[in-house]
Image (tube, rainbow, N blue to C red):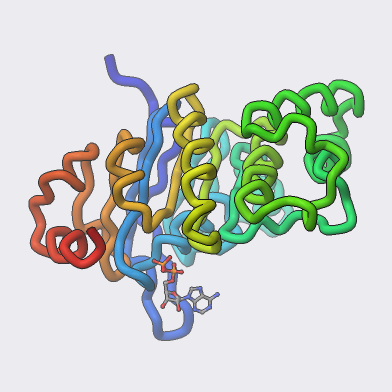
Length: 253
Ligand code: ADP
């Protein structure tokens, strides 16, 4: 049975000045799957991810998540329509950054309530109950009233993940979620992401953690110089077919 993918990007192009970073990238992902985007530094991985929630505006191509589509190449769309389209697209995803970007003067719970209550206008009591449940899910029950500075880097990043989930998005986007962490803190964050993958969340993860990607990803995209050079299931990482993928994996594994 074929289903419509939850995420579909077609023909994404993006240049920063003369630097053509994305050269026509297609990506699609089914609901409930984990997609890992891997590849050399500077190949455009983060730019793809940021294009999915329009933190970066592609020069052309389309992005669709669920029922929201933006056609970046369509210059006939007026500004206010485009703003609405972008907002609709963004409402379907939550983002976890390399560094957590928590509000330092707010408690863990207040950080989690900011989006649902201030942005989405949800009831405080209901959002609080959800936030507590999410904190439990990321192993931080009982930390509600602490401030980010009282937590380890791994715990802060887990709050960052809970905060993205608190918006109840269809898709969670991870931009190198462990690369700013001390090595001994990486495992606890990867364990939380692994847990989300097995519990049916749809995830797109830019990562340098190749073994993690091999274990967790349903789909692997190997990006090289702005094009997807190889894609498939985790066999891309076990038994790569393309020379570029082989070389990359030899360097990093
Ligand atoms: P990766 O995530 O694979 O390391 P990125 O998507 O971060 O790659 O970056 C790809 C290229 O785009 C790099 O050459 C980077 O310097 C450039 N780049 C990314 N963001 C910007 C920006 N905002 N302005 C100018 N150049 C950028």
